[in-house]
Amino acid sequence: MMFFLQEELTLQCPFAPSDGSHHIQVPVIDLMIQGSIRFYCHGSVGMTREWLLTDNITPAATVVEMMFASMPENLRRIYFA
Picture 1 (tube, helix red, strand yellow):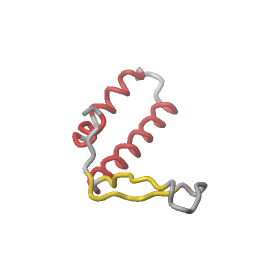
Picture 2: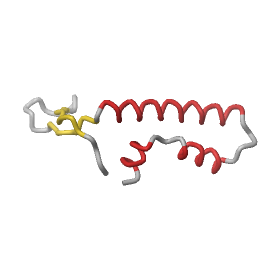
Picture 3: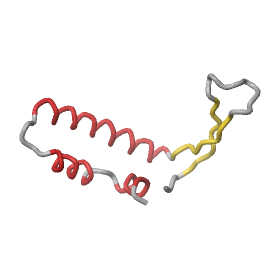
Picture 4: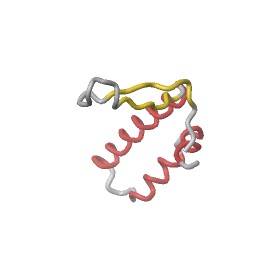
């Protein structure tokens, strides 16, 4: 999986000991990737909700195909690399 990193971020679980022994390094994702993820997720959740509540005609496979077709290219490179 490929990530576009700006820097590393140190996180600590709030339930872990405070001696620093449970810190982990996680990548910070590029701002454009973050925006694409948020935009795509909000849209796909909204569309799924709309489909579940109002559309009893469109097959699930078609909905999945539409979501895949609308996925931004930068997310495809991350998820399907």
